[in-house]
Image (cartoon, rainbow, N blue to C red):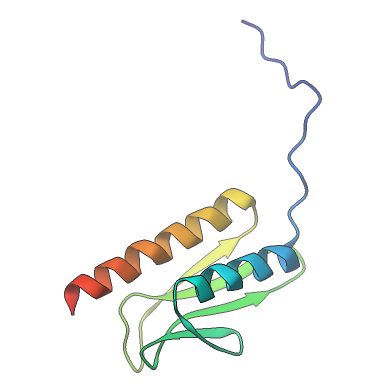
Length: 98
């Protein structure tokens, strides 16, 4: 079989649009919005920011008053889905731990 591209290219990544979609997904996960940060029961668990080419995210390893952070850069639709899936996994794990 030959590899053909069929002339399709992925749509360009727009960080501002992705940020809107990520923020909507975080609200759907019942996280409280505080500016560009999101909280779970009063503890900051996600912080978001956007530059010209990507969305910068920090996710808490565990909910705490001063959490340790994992940094993620979202520069494509696949990475956006990965970020939301990772948040869902962590929220489920945090619920089980309590």
